[in-house]
Length: 565
Image (tube, rainbow, N blue to C red; front, side, top):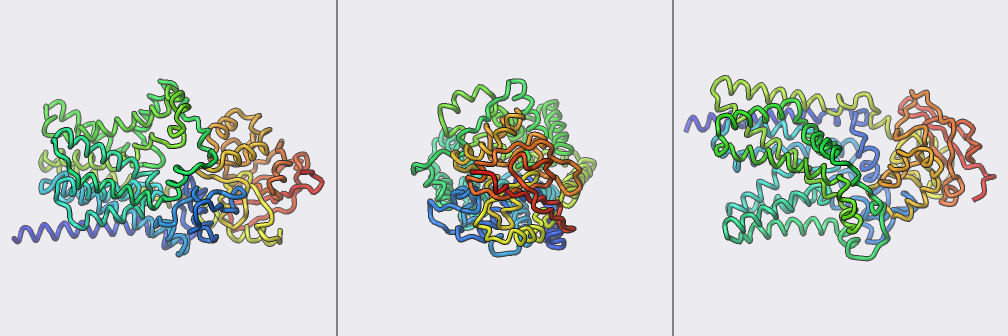
């Protein structure tokens, strides 16, 4: 009894230490506030601005068919997040960096809890040291997840724990509570669709192998799916009701040769993807490869089959991801629109959960080697923590603008005051900076970055930049065959959307079709760079805006009144 109490004390002490480390990891968001560095790609350049738009408009709970006039003269409301997602509500009702920090804290705490419970109850039970359980759960909780995904990836271990309890007919009310609440803090399309489809395959395998229909397991999968579909009711109705084609209709993804496909497979296997970074390359990957070699040489396949099979699954998902972009798919994608509009390659979103389970199993294999093995395990966990802390936003993005510098609220308020008209009465576009900055500050923009929007608008906007696209094959392909960034692309700038005030570059030969720009309501262009001879493209420099608190110098150009629409 005394030994059991001692073990519980040590376990609790380690868990409390893990929570303290998580708190330290996210503390800068609360301490530095808007002076904190945060991810820009697929974050500040898009999602964070969307939340502010939803919070400052009357469209948060708007009915199906509503449009948001601030973006592209009417972005369909269904193209932004559901109002039922936790991250949306945090950003609507709390200051931006408080919401950001809380999202980080909530996600990482539940990532830890989920991985700890999953390993303890379904992979080790009473056979593993708490150092491995707590250490693996902590490292998993600190991976640099995509913020707007919430628990889409880091919540998978908690969901799997609940599903495996139900599958084993050992479920309690807690499991169903998890399946009920997780959909409100994760996304279906960008995470749990892939997880739930794998659960469905697992149920079917059980039916085939065990000749038993585990209806409780089946209906729990269906139950969680239904909740997701209810939350995403706008998306469901858009699939059921007739609607005009979206920008995703023209996606051309499958362009890679076999050689480049295999290279992409190796890249994803070794490095991962920017939206599911698990940072397994320097520590975990060499450890797993070493353990697999040891298993092979000693013929321990049966004893370590879980480790081997999960490692194989990780590789298979990387292979599937790469082959989704193989050019051989294109005829089939051309025949079935769903294969173009929905990215089925994203089963790699399961990678973080899988590789950290494998990490725990590999650590356990080494742990069993005696005193030296246990010492190696502790060192490996600490080394992985160092790797993860090295990717903390304050270190990783320290050379990029802070939240405050990026959105430059005071600077854009000065621009708004200078124009001195209701922002809804004119439209603007940006050059050399993300349009999300203007959107965040309340301006009505003709340019945007959205996952999908009406295809007809993409074609109209293309008229503005047609001459610049004709100069640059790469930009032309980028816009025509993807187009989620509906930007004022400039040949001289390429795919660079962030020219800070330290830049010495200027635009020497800008050629825009300003007539369609004006026809769409465009009156101003916010450029991060000076434009030589702007009159050649129908523009006039109004004023230059500088600010110590901003990352940008903004050159305000106005469409010349002599330009005829």
